[in-house]
Amino acid sequence: MLRKSILATTASLAALSLSSPAQAACEDLAGMHIDGGSITSAEVVNAGGFTAPPGGFGPPPGVAASPFATVPAFCRVRLTLTPSSDSDIKSEVWLPLTGWNGKYVGVGNGIWAGTLSYAEMGANLVRNYATAATDTGHTGNGLTAEWAVGHPERLVDFGHRAVHVTTVAAKAVVEEFYGRAPERSYWNSCSTGGRQGLMAAYRYPADFDAISAMAPANPMTDLMTQSMWLGWQAQRFGVTLGGAELGLVHAAVLRQCDAGDGLSDGIIGRPQSCGFQPASLQCAAGQTESCLSSGQVQAMAAIYDGVRASDGSWQLPGWPRGSEMQLALLTSGAEPFPVATSYFRDLVFQGQSGWDWKAMDYAEYTSVARSFGGDILNVPSDGLDAFFARGGKLLLSHGWTDGLIPATNTLAFHHGLYNSLPPALAQNQLRLFMAPGMDHCSGGDGPSVFDTLGAIDSWAETGLAPQTLLATRPVQAGGGFGGPPPPPRAPMARPLCPYPTEAVYNGTGDAGTAGSFTCRAV
Image (cartoon, rainbow, N blue to C red; front, side):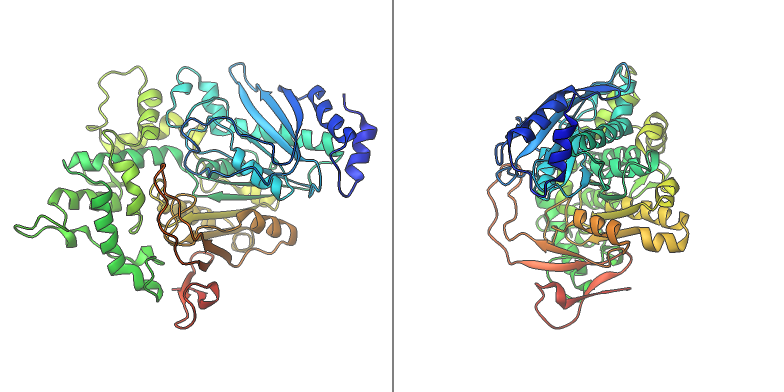
């Protein structure tokens, strides 16, 4: 057991040095009792000394790579949690040895999880937060759900339970190490991590005081259906929709809709107002270049329009105009996105012969996807009352050019949530920020770097909801998938505005600075 006198002493120091008492306090955590699990190791990691284990395919979507050279010394605690007889949840808690700010941050995963988000943990540690992450109960590259075949409890762990038991255990470890519980607890994550944040607010409303859910993969079963739909369109119409074709469409969308926010800058500020139709690019008689075939026009129209049943009835939202450049990840394969096909093939229809992803009615897809996993994987927009009743704050955000999760899903969730809440509560405890030109969780032609953690921390501390978020664009864009980086680009900063207001150019001033834009209802 831990020596309480040492802990009391270390907790009272304003700046704890890497001394033998601190190291002893960390290593003694290995003997701590954890309900429903155990601590497998506890050790001090020196400043800049952490090396992440090999990730196979690298970080999944929604989990950005990050070096660890600036990460300060910390106590690394590894846990195995077993809330069911078939659970095997691996989690880690990282505790700053010096300068802990008294707060805790949980981080989530990408796609089907299977790894710990070490990069996000390191970023939180640099800012003096205690932090934790989990693999949600299985290991893998996150692209398939085969790990859940015959293991229903592990699907529950992925769906919601692993994050909760990790949070409970992490808070206990924090209190044991520092001698006091976290003053505030936050969740800050994107993609699957965004859905996990919403799920925590829904099922475990006392776990977090404020939540940032960026580009949440919710409702997850609907997203699986939408991804199948998107991946089917090229084959449905017997055409190619690769980077060249989608780039042609994107350029046409920009020509028509770029100036809608008062400035032609390669970024569409108001995609909902963009009336671009793919038919405007259809090849004329004898034309073969810089145009779309009839089949390509129909495929793009179906992607924008959204999921429809065989009788033409509308089912689920489509992708916004402007999101074309990321769509190739889902349109270019022999099959749709494996994350989605695995959900149907391995889980929904496991053991059934004759399933053909190219022939099924999409009304049935929507229905069976929900009936199989909706209770485990989906968060209803009207189900967060308990979280808000205890004062919880929710920051939603999404990039308009996200090609993996349509921004329309988050708009629909926000609409249902906002209308389910009393007006005063919705105004004070809920915010949605849409980011023009931002891809999935990061990147894109627009400003995509903004401080969601700082925003929810300030919101929880002061009670004042954020009125804008300052977003910046990295001068060096990533090459993506191992490709060479593109040439450096001009710096850019913009205000992100609370939905439904939008940033509009003032008409004068440097278009690369945030001060030249004003949030307006348009």
